[in-house]
Amino acid sequence: MRTRTLLSIALMLCASTNMQAQNHAESKHENIVTNMIDNPMLWADVPDPDIIRVGDTFYLVSTTMHLMPGAPIMKSKDLKNWETVGYIFDKLTDSPKYDLSPTEGTVYGRGQWATSLKYHKGKFYALLAPNEHGAMGDTYIFTADKAEGPWKQVSRMRHFHDCSLFFDDDDRVYVVYGTGEMMELKQDLSDVIEGTHRHIFQREADETGLLEGSRMIKHNGKYYLLMISHVYAPGRHRREVCYRADNIQGPYEKATILQSEFGGFSYEAQGTIVDTQDGDWYGIIFQDRGGVGRVLTVMPCRWIDGWPMLGDEEGRVPDRVRALKNGEPEAAIVKADDFSNDKLGLHWQWNHNPVDKAWSLTERPGYLRLKTSRVVPNLYLAPNTLTQRMEGPKCTGAVVLDLSKMKDGDVAGLAAFNDHSAVMAVKKVGKKLTLELSDQQVRLSQREKKVENVEVKVIETVALQQLKQQKLWLRIDANFIPRTDIATFSYSLDGKEWTKIGGDFRMGFDWQRFFMGTKFGIFNYATKKVGGYVDVDEFTYNKHQ
Image (cartoon, rainbow, N blue to C red; front, side, top):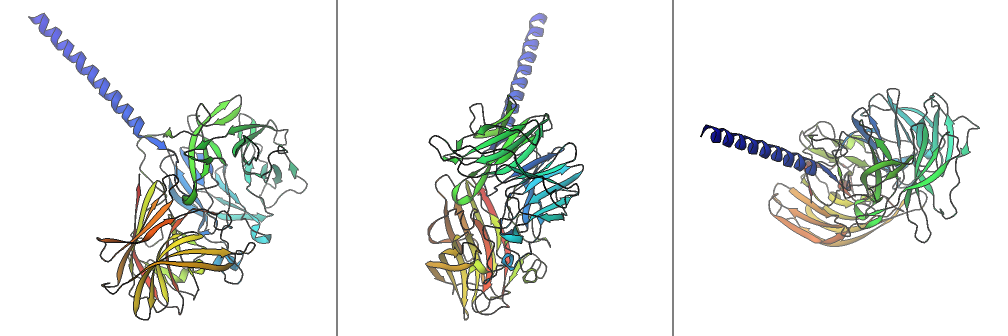
């Protein structure tokens, strides 16, 4: 009896141990499965990426063109949760174009492009060249002790298109740019060293488009230059290529490291690679995705025969990638805001340079006050339009506006803002308020980006006689499920019951005008006289699957 009892206890303990081990394995497996990065890694407009790692932290910079502040710095510890932690500059002031000049022009689709980010001997460096003509296109070099800033300008020099800053092991500094061009910089980064210009490779005969988006790194003593290649030949597609050499001056040999479509969209390319503390490598590459803009994908980078091959084992962009760490706090680059802080959140950017005296977070604590500061004919010339990215697969953004201090001729509201916008606007005419949804398209001059015309098609109007306390809720629902790109619009008089206004609006992407994805845009401008204002109580935001 005693023997049987002990045996039974032993079997029970063994079964319990096995069950605990199985549960632990299942729990561990579940943790791994749930801690995945779904591609797109950032399903929002984050083009022209450069990414570096300092210690256990990744830093990412992207293009935001005419939006201010510019050159956003984002950080992450797991390549999944990203947050904006700073900007390289608050404003650009070379020209009245940055202030939405009705006579000189604008910088829609211009401004800051393809910033290169580096870390060298305890300091961060950024090099960027606005996509502009003349002195406005001169290259900037900035430096900072922390990626969060403050950044200070080191120098300005001639224009370098889609350039990469590169510090070699011997402390010599180079800029690689254009289609395979390179120059050496002075040690103090004040300018180039004249006479150092050279072409380090020649493109192939069928590469009739530019090779651009230069990103140079050094690995195991070799130099690697990653670029996007536009090929217009049968069976060839947009692709990411790599040039490799034992000496920075060359000769260089070439390989295609990624040629993959993804998610039902076109072939993707342009980006860079980065290593982890454990010695693994990842590629961060962007893809054009219509109305939401150009999104970021993450993929394994496998060193094969000395080449950084991107994608899964079949060379394709994977649907999912395991995150580097478990337990990192959730973070995002698009956020809700109750405007209770006395500083504007880093998730916001102004359309062109803001008029600082015409907005406030302190005059009425808990509200963002947007004042009119100049009389303008349309939204595309209106200062102080505040924007945030939209995100896929679906998202919803809504604002609460106090309209009690609007003046005759003022226009305020929420827009799906782009070169082709859907604008949900409250208009004050005399003492009456009307809500209007319109389809608006801007026509810009080719060179100066002057606002030549705005074509406005009114979809629906609603008289607001029932408006109590002159407070109004406005909402945009955006759907970026592949091949959808639809925005719908609603309003509410109490924040509870919502009424749809207008129909579906098709969001788009036009590289010849804004060259960016659709944004949430909060605006207030005057068409007759200045002095009015609206108070934005809050911006609510949700991302949906």
